[in-house]
Image (tube, rainbow, N blue to C red; front, side):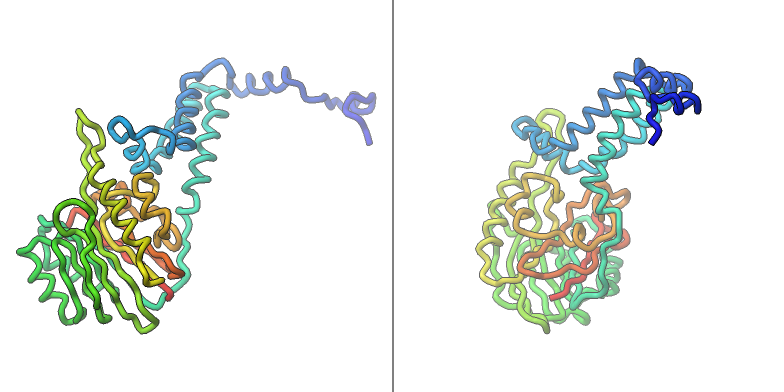
Length: 337
């Protein structure tokens, strides 16, 4: 073996690497360690928010939940910071940008691949049809063409219920509406019970659905809306109380296989939904392709409409349907019993 500092190596012109020579190579590329410290600091801030989002307190304006609702969008900072680092020809910035890049792909990279595994035993769908739906007939057509055997609807205006009941009756002979939420099914529905989510009116219930493969406990829920206000931040207190109540009900459910369909007004990253998400599995996370954003319909930025399960149900596919007259998009999933 010829050592790098041997006469033979010197004769070949090989020289051992040193920090000085590394700096010289960067200089030849026009890169400098002395520029771009502000860009590097911003990259590190993005990395800290990604890595420690759960530590950002909710005490003032629910800032932690607000960040977690749109957490994947922090990834947009990476190409911007990378471009700035190249523009400034800053080695410091380019190295610093690697950290949020690696963190983001570690957290969300798995969502970018198609994890579907074929058709399941049945298909479920949930849709916030919106009280101000501009085309309920179009929504009925969308639902009938979805191929789902179990359909949950939220934000049902009283005047619109007959439209959905009549329009879906041929395909879904079994249905129940409680308050502003409803369930339509090709399978029998029994033992319906309202779930008190502590908001003073009915926006959640539980039903027993008998599929050809066996029984399901199906929960349909529409948690209280959240608001972003200048003076009080991300107001989500009522939703958080309801999430705890719904999580308690699901945890006490005697039927083994459980589905939750609904508009939870929060994402799987939002810590405030932990009473629910800590015990249930997301169909999109397990069998989807991409983030599955469902709201707002025109340009979806967050998945707040959820299909979750527990008890051994296996999601085999998850997808978002085309926009209709609602401000949400319907989401559907296939399950193997």
